[in-house]
Amino acid sequence: MKYQLVLWDFDGTLADTLPLALSIYNRMAAERNFKPIDDPHAVRDMGMREFLKSHGVPLHKIPFAFSTFLGELRTMAADVVLYDGIDLALQQISEHGILQGIVSSNNTETIRQCLKANNAEAHFDYVSGTSRIFGKEKRIKQALAALNVPAKNALYIGDEIRDIEAARSAGLDIVAVAWGLNSAAALTQHRPTHLILTPSELLAILEG
Image (cartoon, rainbow, N blue to C red; front, side):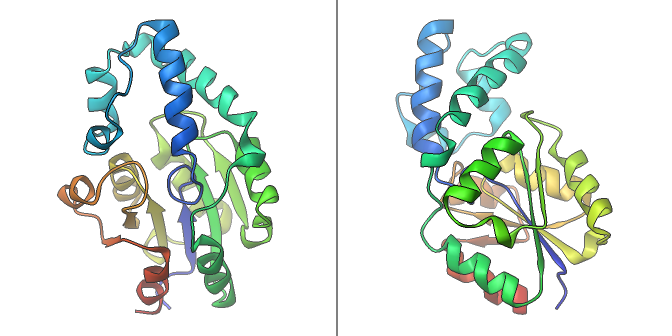
């Protein structure tokens, strides 16, 4: 197989954290005078930078706001479920002898708590949370180095435009998933290597 390693994004890709994220963000928006998310479907067509600008989140407030957001999400980590079909996809990838890891903007401990609660820990050889909105490409490169896998033999899976940008910057092929934050139309505009609608489509990509 071409791919020796599959690196996953966490929120919106593996784990269905979007309803919690919406609730937390709108509560923070009321407290900090950000624009609330009134139409979640409209947000799906925005990149992260566009979202932050259109919702009045000043650049200097992003680190503190994001840290607060992750802290609240961490308290609910054990209650977060994986998307339908993810458990089977993880099992199939492991059975093919492909390494799996996670590089996410979420907190590492939050990710591990969720994996443990969903009996999915054993599938992962590497977990790294950046706790930053941007700069994921650096962590992807660190994962490749730690696992001794060339970029050409690794695949990143994510649900956002910024995942496509980060994977491309790190030299990886990217599978964009249409069940997460960004819509299929928005993802397609940024030309991912692959676009899938369900986790069941992953195996064909890996075998192909």
